[in-house]
Image (cartoon, rainbow, N blue to C red):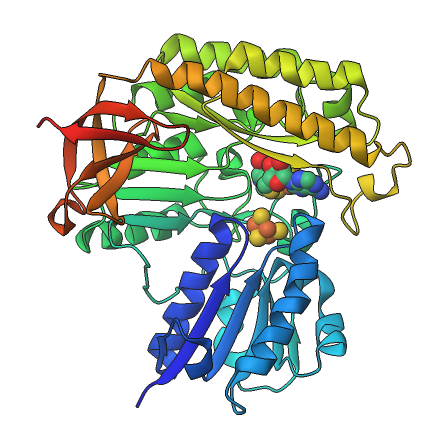
Length: 434
Ligand code: SAH
Ligand code: SF4
Ligand code: F3S
């Protein structure tokens, strides 16, 4: 009988892909099968996130729960970003944990599994050329890492401390991975990196040909059978004209851009070390919309960064009103260990932070109602990926709207034209017209 693996994944898409990589190694080399039942598992992994403080607290309560429910012989491994930054402390606080594996050391899963109390968290470890075995949760959409780590030093962000310096994965490995995914039925690929449009800045081998992100997109789009390319996260600082023009004219690139604003105030952006101003951000949006009028734009915003005044917050609101983002991921600033901003003393009052976040979110909902109304009666080409409750199947339009229709399994992995019949804030409903 095969051994059973239970894995819980927190955090971003890179963590989801790292989990797939660990599952692949454990299946192929160690004979594990995944299970949804913790009680049946021989190995329990939690792939953690530490971008904000709350998930770290959650980790130790989760671990306590695992200990109570697990089989006595089952091992527990803590992986991911919190593993990178807490390291040995995890085993000190939770001595029943068997090993700790950092976000930059995923390829060592097979080794740490056999060493009790192993702690592998080297953020300089270079696994950019490691050939992981294949495993994908979805056969319709393939997540592919194109770089690891991050070279930016945004003052609020822990990621460079958990994932180390940025290294690009060689383009031939990426292209081969994409081809394999397409051969296995995926019509869409989703390229992942903390800073995707900085791709090509550094490869492990100094001999590697200079290939930038725009060129990588061109090469990938030549793959036959591949219909859609998405990516996250691009950085506004690196959105040059060449990149925006390729994005607009390449029919395989989905017309949905994530543009993480963080703050609309040039003063706060400088304190955050984001490398752009309010004007640059608005200029890039304008350029993008001028060459690609139907593009949808999503963003990330942090409210109440230290020193954010009412005027600074008003600048963020001003950008929101000017851009009318299709989707906003908004967060209250959370001080993180080993970051520059952790030492900033001009902290914003907690009540003010909560009020700003609530205001921003309600304004976004108002703007969204206005944006979504115009979709009623429109037709979108939808790629179906999920089976939902009550005989609905859902998928995404090219510009990333989530759309559901009545239907069944046969629609999965298929494209259809769908006319929108009713609108909601996060999901639209429609009927197939072709
Ligand atoms: N590389 C991506 C961000 C990855 S982290 C980028 O630059 O866009 C995802 C998001 O978490 C960030 O965009 C930011 O909005 C948020 N975030 C990161 N650190 C944070 C902190 N200390 N407090 C609150 N939100 C934070
Ligand atoms: Fe963090 Fe900035 Fe790097 Fe994004 S670009 S991961 S916010 S340091
Ligand atoms: Fe979290 Fe690490 Fe991703 S901190 S957001 S899992 S890069």
